[in-house]
Length: 313
Image 1 (tube, rainbow, N blue to C red):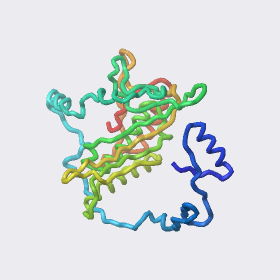
Image 2 (cartoon, rainbow, N blue to C red):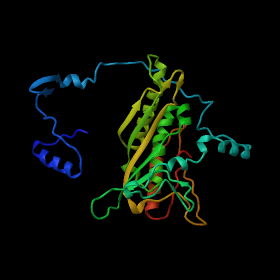
Image 3 (tube, rainbow, N blue to C red):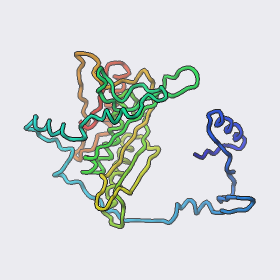
């Protein structure tokens, strides 16, 4: 990691780094001349203009042909179930529906002694939590501020429409933060993207183009920014491509007292389903969704509501 500080603060900054047992070395000086100069044993071995570095290499352009999702295969279209038992058994037979507790518990969720809740909760430790919540570490005393993180991604929805997949990945990640007691208006996003290998074929660029448009649409709709991310375009082996993948991670801060868990707390607790409005293209009505999330947050603050997310209902 590189940090730029005022020359008069260098010594103090290095002292702080030493206190945290971090190796820090002054490696460069910022000058007025817009050039990168590296000196080794008294000789300049690199001398490059800043303008060249700003180009990030050769300029490239490509054409994109966007695939329109099929209405016949609409993943968001409600499906009538006539054989409930058969549908139930078929769903349970899906490997994606099996318990992941064995895998999850291979990782110690208590490291640092700051976890507010564990990956599974409830009386039998079988209710899966939908987000991560941990207290901020402090050297002395206690801290009631927590960090929150959740994710959203549905590979089946994204395979049908990368555009819708990205929009609801963002919406899912926001819903899980709200369901845990967070304030959606303070959320920031970071995206993990993974797509098939790109070629000169314009249709190969359809998936990342549509997914990024969807993520941008959701950000503008919620009025919340993305502050980071990581992408890869190498998801191809021979003739096998990965599903178009844009995972939205939502991060937030809150007070420990406002955090709630998803399990039912007592006999007689009621389950309430909140629904969101969608237009003719199955896209969220962001104004209604944000109003709903504000209402849910207010009810949680007043200790009148315990939630479990279901953002696409």
